[in-house]
Length: 107
Image (cartoon, rainbow, N blue to C red; front, side, top):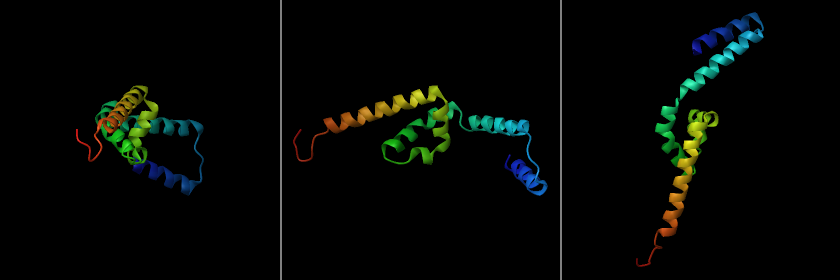
């Protein structure tokens, strides 16, 4: 795919031609299709815990895993799963901090 775009770019640099609107829309459609296929829901589900852990640890998960973030932004089912997992882990983390004995105390 990269080769195709490089060839097109070279052609248009040399010929200074403009793309027809239909051609631009065609390219955009191809790019949208490729992006959706880059990370299917099954892969998002399998990597969601890693993404949420990065977020909770203060890492820039969206920057580290941009395709997953883009998928979450466009897929309501995966986004719902993400929000549920995030909420559950945040609650678990809060409960763990409240229930953990303080250092030096006897349980």
